Amino acid sequence: MEFIKAGAQLVVNCAPFGCMPGTISSALLQKVQSDTGVPVVSVVYDGEGDPNTILKVYLGQMLRV
Image (cartoon, rainbow, N blue to C red; front, side, top):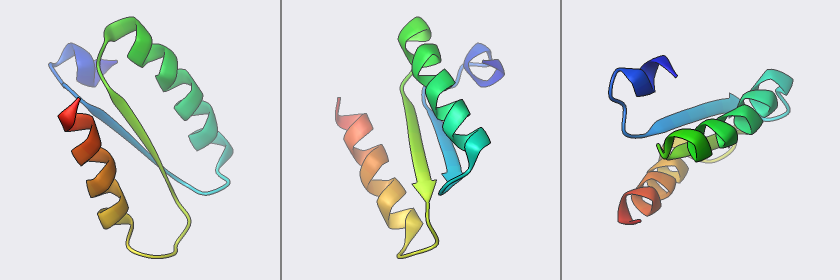
């Protein structure tokens, strides 16, 4: 919420796979997105592949909307 109050136009939530706090924050951020209209992208990292490439695809899709 502090980022949004400061003018953030997109929030990226990154969490390790299986992380309970990350799962909870992903759920809470869905409500923040609907209440504020600021897009929120939640990305789970599992340690495989190139996570930056995956994140780039998500962000590219968000910016096209």
